[in-house]
Amino acid sequence: MQNHVISIKDVSVRRGEKYLLKNITWEVHKGQNWAILGLNGAGKTTLLKIVTCYMWPTTGTTDVLGNRYGKVNIHEVRKSIGWVSNALDEQLQSHGSSTALEVVLSGKHASIGLYEHVLEEDVSRAMELLQKFHIVHLADKPLNTFSQGERKKVLLARAWMSQLKLLILDEPCAGLDIYAREELLGSLEMLSKEENSPTLLFVTHHVEEVIPAISHALLIRAGEVVDAGVKNKVLTETNLEQTFQVPLRLKWEKDRPWVRVDGGFIFRK
Ligand SMILES: Nc1ncnc2c1ncn2[C@@H]1O[C@H](COP(=O)(O)OP(=O)(O)OP(=O)(O)O)[C@@H](O)[C@H]1O
Image 1 (cartoon, rainbow, N blue to C red):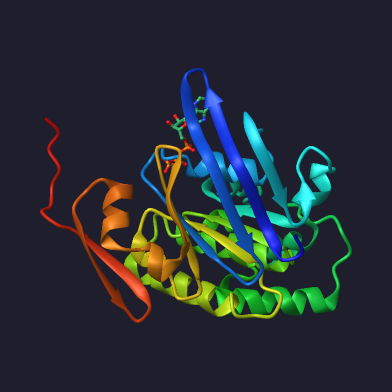
Image 2 (image 1 turned 120 degrees about the horizontal axis):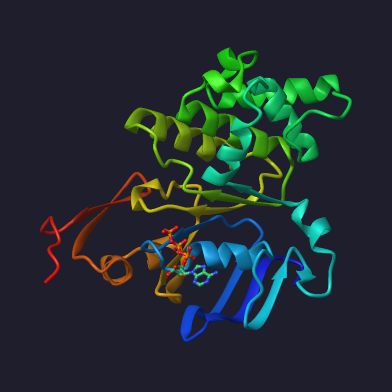
């Protein structure tokens, strides 16, 4: 179990007659970064809630970072897990008068307000992270003046400040323009190569966002795994068509998969 970041065995989540997840077995090892792909309602968030113990499965077992859920203090385990999502962005907006630097520094102590004594080395690291996300010019500006893209970068810089072991990036590029997206993906690619970078779970609706740093992919459809494993084996036209239920064409370029829908619009009968 030493190398396991996540080990989920036969997990099902049932609500009434409906399975939100069905017989999921999934292992994530140290050194891997995973993309999680599936249609709206496929069960991605439910799976992440199982991983973070915000939801309890109907059957099956979950081990995260060497801890069997049900037998550990989950609050302790969660200190090593980050979840960057739109919900966190909304939470952040109530701290609108905080500066980017303050928000990034607050990641050190997993709070949004700054309550702890700030060390000089922490300020240097926070400034370095702001630089890596190309927002160092915003360090002293209040958050309530930032664009959506700028806020996302602040949140991601904050996550890297936290020295996490497992980091969930829940649609980090949603709402970004094409330039901002590529810039953000570039920062993620670079940071993922740093020593002690957390294991990433990258949830996205856009296959082309599976950057080279992502080594593995999990495809999920209607609560069941379509395929899981090394990304080059999993991200195939057949698997993606099965997952997204549209005919599509896939092309790899510079270790990134690009898809286009083959035939355009979908008209339901
Ligand atoms: N607490 C719940 N009780 C009943 N059904 C639920 C509950 N939570 C989620 N669902 C249903 O389970 C299914 C999977 O939802 P989930 O949020 O995991 O999907 P998702 O893949 O994250 O979708 P999206 O891409 O739209 O965020 C959906 O049909 C949803 O309506």
